[in-house]
Length: 81
Image (cartoon, rainbow, N blue to C red; front, top):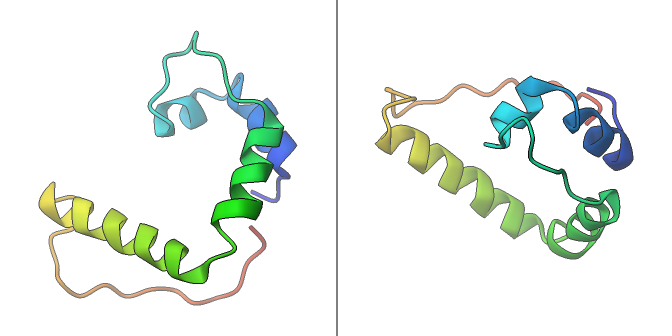
């Protein structure tokens, strides 16, 4: 989705697919958009941290057998995020 941090937080108030992805109950409150912006600026400026997060996500997916192959093909097409 081509959404700002504020739009993502606003949409997560009513979009049940986002709440499900975030492991939130439908009645759970969402964060303040400034918290998401602050996280992005303070934590994700370190590219190595982002790589580590992706690697850990793949490791967990392998452990839970969500991914059953050791080879992963990634579409490297650039998109807006």
